[in-house]
Length: 182
Ligand SMILES: Cc1cc2nc3c(=O)[nH]c(=O)nc-3n(C[C@H](O)[C@H](O)[C@H](O)COP(=O)(O)O)c2cc1C
Image 1: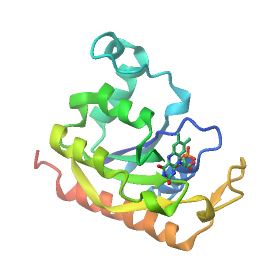
Image 2: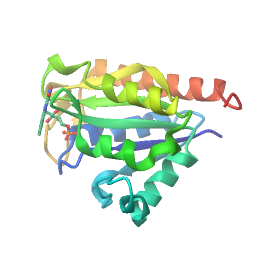
Image 3: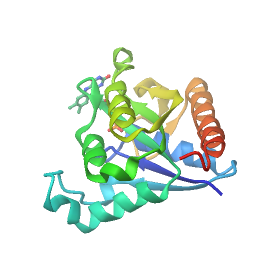
C-alpha cells in the first residue's frame, strides 16, 4: 500500500492549515493508502544551518518520514506571499529525501489574493528534487472555517471539502500510477 505523510507546517496554536490536514487525513482513511499526520508544533526541528542542524534527532526523524513516504501532503500557512518559514525549513532539512516524491498542497491564508504563494515552494521542490506536484490545490481563508480559531474549528465550506477530496483522490491515483517509475 502506498504511504502518504501529511505534514502540518503551522506553528499557530489554533492553526487553520492543521484543520485542513486533519480533514485530508479523514478523507484519506476512505482511500487505499497508509496515511500518517505529522504536526511540526510537536517537534523541535532547528533552523537549517547546512551542517549540525541535520544531525538533530527531530531533523533525522522528519527526514526519515519524508524518505519513507511515497507522497507528502503539505498543509501550509501563507506568510508574506510565500510558505511560512517552518515549511521552507522542512525543505532544507529533509533535502534529498524529497527526491521524486509526489507532493500536494493545502494552504491556509488570511485573504484571497495570495493564491499563487505556494508556487515558489513548488518550483523549489520540482527543480531541486524532481518532485511531482499534484495539480490540485486547496486554498482556504478564515471564512471557510466554522468556529474559526477555536479549539473546535472545522472546515465549513463545501467548496473546500470538494477540493480536499480532489486533492486526496488525485494524490493517491498519481502516486499509484508512478509506482516503480523512479
Ligand atoms: C507573518 C504573517 C504573514 C502573513 N502573510 C499573509 C499573506 O501574504 N497573504 C495572506 O493571505 N495571508 C497572510 N497571513 C495570514 C495567514 O496566512 C493566516 O493567518 C493563515 O490562517 C495562517 O495559517 P495557520 O492558521 O495554519 O497558521 C500572514 C500571517 C502572518 C502571521
